[in-house]
Image (cartoon, rainbow, N blue to C red; front, side, top):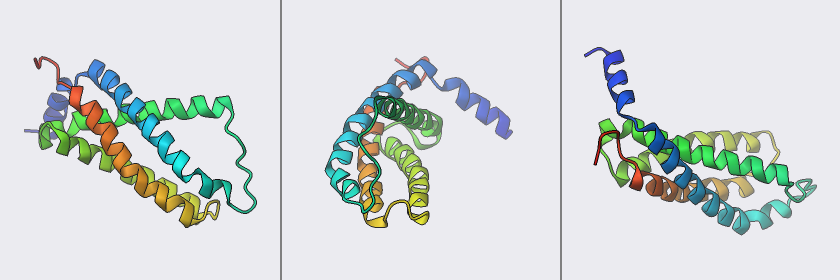
Length: 150
């Protein structure tokens, strides 16, 4: 079967309303867990020499909430896309979360390489986000069903 036929078949089965709804749920879980993680590690950022971070503005908070909701939707979208090959369930949700975590963590590492943040502040945050993203993915995947599924 040509690749385009496989891609089209998999895309046609994705339940886009569920991706958005379940992704929003995953995003809310990610917001809660990410906020807790940030609160636990905030003292490391506040204690940085020459810290110019300041208190977050309302615009910054709204922007981050939107990004976190989109992250949840992205994880559920990836879950829906790989589900035909990996099967439905928590293992596939964890794989989707790991993939998103891996890519985002590479980007986070760039901040260290620029010298903007020391590795001692970023590395705990990077490793703390993996379990949080997995829990968020599990929440979203729990309620995701393909179109036509009961």
